[in-house]
Amino acid sequence: MLTAVKLKACKTCGSNFSPWSSTQTVCGRVCAQKLVKVEKVAEKAKDRATRESQKTIPQLIAEAQIEFNKFIRLRDQLANRPCISSGRTLDWSGNNVDAGHYRSTGAASHLRFDENNCHAQSKHDNQWKAGNVVGYRVGLIQRIGIEAVEALESNNEVVPWDRDTLRQIKVIYRSKTRALRKEQS
Ligand SMILES: [Zn+2]
Image 1 (cartoon, protein in one colour):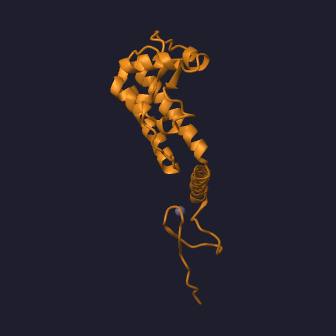
Image 2 (cartoon, rainbow, N blue to C red; image 1 turned 90 degrees about the vertical axis):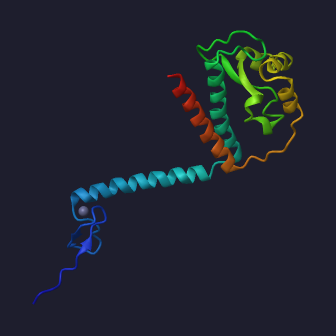
Image 3 (cartoon, rainbow, N blue to C red; image 1 turned 180 degrees about the horizontal axis):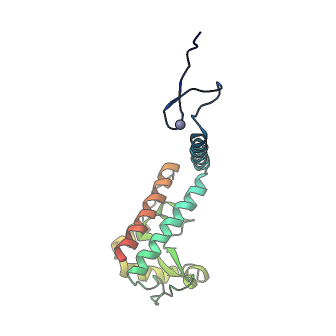
């Protein structure tokens, strides 16, 4: 008497095989190892997606700000710009340059990702002279013109940063930085 051999399709390579147990899903050792690898990658991606979805708004703001600030510093370094508030040559070696906001991120969060509102500034001015706002205004007028400065000063729109926007800002500034680097090389 012949019993029909029930064939199964291998989960990895798709070829038909005859399983020795009902729980066997792959045709052999090689495909079993491949399957484990694929499942590990999928699991990692899922973990990453879960972590991303659980990020808070302040976390996403911080991540986007890092990318934005990096772009601002590179933009001004490549253009050989001096410190926005003191006019002094910036020291790009080491960690002496900040991306300094004219209207602070604390007081004007809606302008935290505004390229007119943020410029390379010496750490000395940004951190020890409380931003040197008076000098900043003088430098800013030279750089972007009085009209743009006044537009910043009178801008009090409310921007409720949402998760998707913040994620996009992070991606956009990361790629803008990459594009600047490419242009340069
Ligand atoms: Zn297989």
